[in-house]
Amino acid sequence: MAAMTLIEAAKLYINNGEDVRGAIVQMFGESNNVMRYLPFIDINGGALNYAQEGSLPAVAFRGVNESFTASTGVINPIVEPLRIAGGEVDVDSFIIDTMGEEARSVHEAMKIKAITQDFQRAFFKGDNATNPAEPDGLQNRLTGDQVISNSSGSPAALSLAKLDEAIDAVANPTHIFLSKAMKRRLSAAARSSSVSSNIQMGLDQFGASVMHYNGIPVVEIADASGKDTVLTFTETSSVGTSTASTSIYVVSLMPGMLTGIQGAGGMQVTDLGLIEAAPLYRTRVQWYASFCLLHGRAAARLRDIIDGAVTA
Image (cartoon, rainbow, N blue to C red):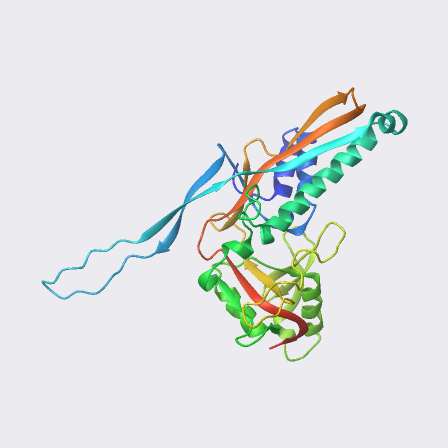
């Protein structure tokens, strides 16, 4: 399957008569904004092997009867393994007997939502060194020129000039990910005549109203309860000793840039039936998935931002 969002994939499954699978995939896709916008590609095997451009070969002009100096570029081979996300849902037989199969479906939907919430957390904050079962998130993957400090002294309120710098660090940026608190700061800035021209309202590819900064959709990241628990003001700053800053991520979500990967079977929901010893009905939900930075400039992190009024 070509790279597409989970919502687009759900429509394809439903159109092909796979209603149950389509409904599950749609549930995944609508659970949070990372899952809504991140394109996924299906892969065979347990990992995706790809090459990321490291550096270009040297070139020069030469004079008549002179020779070129041979050189080659650098390609960095990378292996991104699929990670196993999921869990098991137990529903007491009493609940099924008294409330019907619909009650079981509700619990399964809650498990699916929990899986996607954890994937969103890992997408930004995953730490493979601490938990080898999960992928590294953008906070750990992005280094060098792809990490930009919002301030050269101590953490400061968001500078739009620095946000512009982060945008310039990404090839074909498609989205800006930030916390709900930071989005509120941008909304307040839109009411200021000094910066309002940079912030507009428009529609995303699904027809929903969304804020844009210089034409790029600004997408808030929140948990299933709509709370700021992912991109919180609890990061340790790279300047000074503050532990009360946050980050904004500029990303390019498209084929060949920043994409999700999943096993060719997609999400798996297995009915394990009645467990007599309990007694309860058990369902196993599994998803083999991760994500890849297929291009060296597919994402950038703007860090060292405190909760304050936006500056130009």
